[in-house]
Image 1 (cartoon, rainbow, N blue to C red):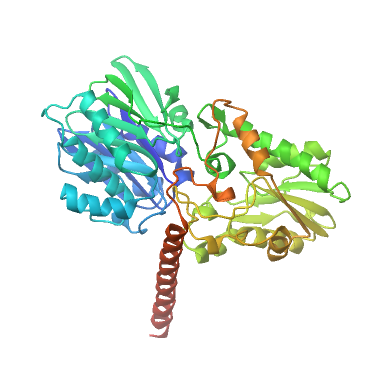
Image 2 (cartoon, rainbow, N blue to C red; image 1 turned 120 degrees about the vertical axis):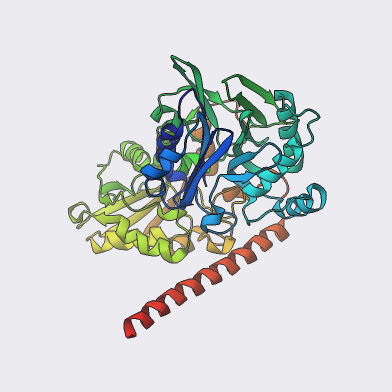
Length: 505
C-alpha cells in the first residue's frame, strides 16, 4: 500500500505536498519522495524513511515550483532499496515524472512489451516504473508537439488497454501540467479537491480525502474508475472517462484497515463503515456466544477502537482501553519482514494490568492476517492476568493472497489459509474466536454508497476482480515471496554475524 499526492498551484507547492504526505504516512513508511517543476526542470528528493526524516530544510528549499507530486511507499512489488523510491522519471517525451499506488498483475508481460515494442529500458523492479514507461510511450504517439488534453486522454486510454491490475496514478509532464488517473475497476482510492486563492484556483489530488483536509482544500469528488484528470500548469481543469467498460470495485480492505477513519472513499465514510462493522459483529457475537461470560471489551488500538465500542454497546458490556500504544512505532502489518513485525509488537503495545487481571476479556481487532500480532497480544493479555481471552475479528478470515497492492501475496503466510476456525483459534492461543461474515462486512461498508454493487474482496473469497489471476500466477508469486524471504533472512544473519565479529575485535 502506498499513498500519492499532487498539486497545481499559483505559489510554491512543496510545503502542501509535505503536509499531505504526513497525513497519509500510514499508507507507507518505507520511503518518501517529492518532485516539483521549476524553470522547466524537475526538482526531486526521495529516500528511504518517514516523511519527517526524508525532507529537511535544505531539501524543501530546493523543491521550488508551483506544481508537484509526492509519494509514500511500502514495498509490495520490487525491493525496499532507495532506488525503488518514487516518484520515477523519464526524459522522453517532454520529461515525465510519475508516482503510483497499486500493483500491476501483468508486469512480466509489460516488461517484454516495453523492451520489444517501445524500445525502452526499465532500471528497477518496480511496476511503477513500468507504468511510467508505458504512459510515456503512449504520449510519444501524439501527432503534435504541443500536447492537448485529448492527446493525454488518448494515452491514458491506451494504458488502460495494456495494463491490468490496480493503479491510482499521478504524473507531471514538463511544460504541460499534472495528470491523475485510476484503473478501470477503481480498486485503489483517488480524490481531488480545489482551493480558491487571490491568484486563482488551485487543485490537489490524493489517495485519501484527509490530505485535502490538512491542506485546506475543498473536496470535489472521487476520481471515477477509468477516469483521467488533467490540470494544466496555469490551472485549467479537464477530465475524461478513458476506459471502455469501467466498474466500481473499491478494495474493501481500505475500510477494514488501511484508510484513516476521517477519510471518505467513494462517498463512503471510513469511520461510519467501521461503526457498522462493529454493530454487525456485535449482533453475531450476541447470537452465537450467548453462553459466554464476558466482563469487558478491549480494542487492539487503533483501527478497531470504533468497532469495539459498537460491540460493547450491542452486548451491553463495559468498553475499556486495555492497551497503551506507542505512537512512534510504525504499523506492524506493513513493516517489511516477518522478523521486524515480531519484534515491533511488544515495542508498540503495553497492557494496563488492572483492565485484565481476573477478567474474561473480549479482544477486538480489525482483522487477522498472519496471526503473529494476534498471538502475541493474547499472550500479553494472559500475562496481565486475564482469566479467559476471547478474540473477535471485524473482517472475515483472510485466506487468499492479495495481488492489488497489499503486502500479503503468499498464501503460506496467511494463518487462515487452509485452516478451519478451531485451528486458527488454537494457533493464536485464544479461548474462543469469531470472525465477521463477508456478507455483513460488504453490507456495513456499502451502506454509504448503494451505487457500488461489488467490492474487491479477493483476500476473503479468492475472487479476483480483474479475472486474470489463476493458480499458476499465485504459485509464481509464492515462489517469488519465498525467495525474497530467504534473501532477507540471509541479510539479517549476515548483519548479526557482522555485529558479532565487530564485538570480538
